[in-house]
Image 1 (cartoon, rainbow, N blue to C red):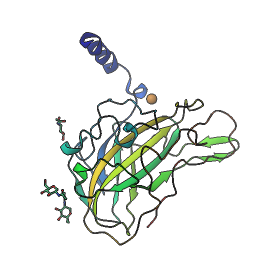
Image 2: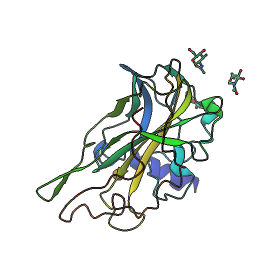
Image 3: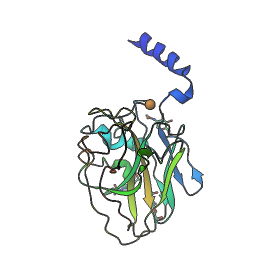
Image 4: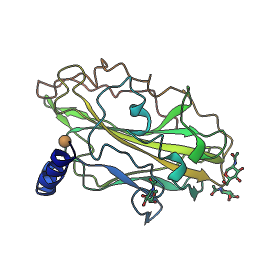
Amino acid sequence: MKASLALVSVALAFVPSALAHYRFTSLVAGSTVTDPYVYVRQNTNYNTPVTDVTSTDLRCNVGGLASAANTSTYTVSSGETVGLALDQPIYHPGVVNVYLAKAPGNASAFDGSGSVWFKVYQLSATVSNGEYTWPDNNLGQITFPLPTALPAGQYLLRVEQIALHVAQTFGGAQFYLSCGQINVSTGGSGTPSPLVAIPGVYTGKEPGILIDIYSTATSYTQPGPAVWTG
Ligand SMILES: *[C@@H]1O[C@H](CO)[C@@H](O)[C@H](O)[C@H]1NC(C)=O
Ligand SMILES: *[C@@H]1O[C@H](CO)[C@@H](O)[C@H](O)[C@H]1NC(C)=O
Ligand SMILES: *[C@@H]1O[C@H](CO)[C@@H](O)[C@H](O)[C@H]1NC(C)=O
Ligand SMILES: [Cu+2]
């Protein structure tokens, strides 16, 4: 087993980067791009996407709960632009959702369980002349301004890109995702809603997840709850 794993690693090293998948590795705050996996929970499945929407791995990726304590928390202010950067630009057609969950204590001790997640940002597809346009094509990072009404405290910042190139069969959509850890030092007094659980938020049968993107497009329905704008 060890030998064959090593051979796979060697083979992967020679795959042109355009053919490898991509990972969300680094927290972005303002104009600062932090080092990989310092403020982002490190996953253990390299760049393999999650495809089972009922798995706990959908929350912070495979290994993302176990690496919590080894992940630092970055202090930001509400209203600041934050997000996650990738190791290489997104190239599978798809859409993006960003969720936050407030930790009861330290973000590094939070497993993100329960109905605690709310959506703060999304990039959805547009349709024109029967064709989809994918908003995230070639992006190297996903960033957005934190709502100014966001209360102070520590949060998990979860970015997912749902790649839809083989999503015409159930379980075909690929979820590329990571969780960062942020500490909102000066916040507002809003009440984020609606709150959802991850896993739980998706069935995998949503029209924006189980979809043949190569057929004639009429509309696109973004998966997940409405964005909380504060
Ligand atoms: C902890 O994270 C650092 C990067 O911040 C990494 O170099 C190190 O390997 C990690 N340790 C464990 C046990 O995962
Ligand atoms: C958060 O972590 C710090 C440093 O490890 C610790 O002193 C503090 O008690 C923790 N706070 C909570 C609410 O767990
Ligand atoms: C979070 O921010 C507050 C306010 O600036 C600060 O007192 C606290 O030490 C920070 N916590 C962490 C874990 O960075
Ligand atoms: Cu891929």
